[in-house]
Length: 113
Image (cartoon, helix red, strand yellow):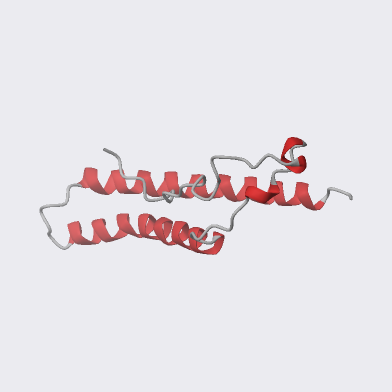
């Protein structure tokens, strides 16, 4: 099983009520009475966790290579190469996500009210 350390396990439906109250607002699609404040990880916590996981993935190839050069026979060069590929993939994903977030932010800021 592949362990995914870049994406946190968050249940986005935990605070949503399964039954909607029937009143004049919910019949018109304004079901704001069933919204609840959820106690979960904040955006800042999720983002800092993702950045720290990415940082650990980027530092791992250097650590493995250093240990192999010091004579640790348990570490194979293929492990180092795999760690480098995972770090490159993580950086590429983070760059693409950052670009999409900035684009979405600029789009929202350009909306005139």
